[in-house]
Image 1 (tube, one colour):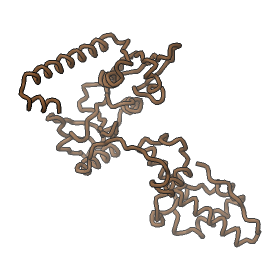
Image 2 (tube, rainbow, N blue to C red):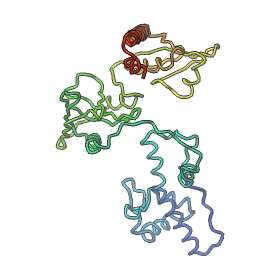
Image 3 (cartoon, rainbow, N blue to C red):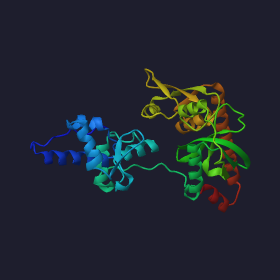
Amino acid sequence: MQPARLTRPTHHAKNEKLAWRIAHIIARLHQGDALDKRQLAADFGVDVRTIERDLHQRLRGIIERNAEGRWQLSAAARGTVPASYLEGYAQLTGTQGFFPDTSRGWLIRQLETGPAHTGLHAQATPAEDLRAQGALFEQLQNAVQQRHPCRFTYKGKPRHAQPLRLIQRNGVWYLAAAEVPGDTPHPKNFSVSLIQDLLVDQASRFARNPAHQRYIDEQQDVWFTSQATEAVLRVSPQAAHYFTRRPLLPHQHTRADTDGSLLVTTRIHHPQQLLPVVRYWLPHVRILKPDAWHEALLDSLRESLAAWGAAQTAAGTGSVDEQTDFNQ
């Protein structure tokens, strides 16, 4: 985010210009900006040596240099969360495009106004409660960052894995990891809530496989398999809008036809990425390709109808109380 245009004081007194410059530097520091002395000199129209005196003498004790050589507010001088952290938080939670206006200034105005008076209400996505597993989550995060291998039990089976990333999808946290020894050329995902008996080998470090990192970066879901299958759907005009306002499937591409319907192509790593979406939009969505998935969907629908019919028949032969229980 670019700093606001500077309006210099009309009075040319030396002390006034100094106070004005220092005030603007401090304001930018409190926004969380990391400042470059040469850029500051250009912004304020002064010599670099003047900025160096500001930084080394006039602001001594409240600022510090970071690893890149830029100047930032020291930890002891930070009384509030810097405004720039809001952008980092949005990136961390995947909400960068949540609002039509994504500028820092707009968001700060909403926070200053207060939730009750903005006229906005965002309904939260239901998420699993991992508070009881906070220590385990922290251990996994540290293992990912420090590249420590782990051992744990997952669904009753012992696992030895190299943790690569923690991924949140639809309110559920997963650990993407490469199993050791690897029996697949791609990472696997493990639901964090099902990980038990975690042991992190802090004395060891593994070398990340760049191919694994690229694979995770390219995925738009948590289904990890070696091969993706191209699926083609026909979406009726009645449901077309819902597939174009936002992607409902990974790697989704749409083509509008003259009758208002859509031809949708998608890359699927597991049928369960596709079939729940198709079931939700029945009868407005049909699987054109692969044929086997279309037939599998029809078979599952026939089985469901048969099971429901059998249950209804059984309920009809039961007592009045049993029928009431079934209907409820």
